[in-house]
Length: 117
Image (cartoon, rainbow, N blue to C red; front, side, top):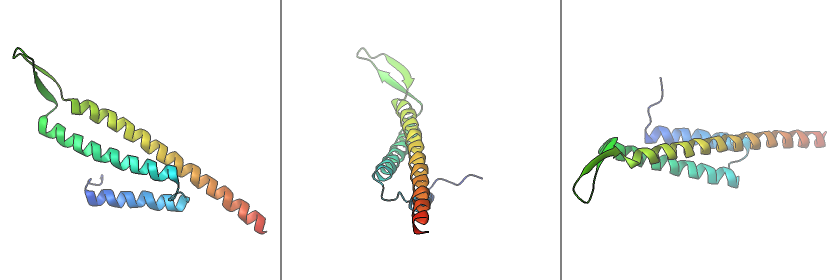
């Protein structure tokens, strides 16, 4: 069963990501911090767009100068899809940062161990 998305659950998940970052040694890494912050902003944008879509619906009317009306897709849907793609790319970048930093930390730890022996 999937976890219900609530602000409290999102904070718990965010703390898990930060714990992984700390374990990997990248909690103070500039690229991790800025990318993680960007991801949180994207999630906020998506939340706002979801509300806009819920309130206005998938289709909206546009009135022309002569009073004609035309039905077209809500622009929030397009922006939602674009922001979702960007957020997915940001997550991919976060994962790469975590993996790369973790791998580098393991290599540094192995080198430190070798130098001490």
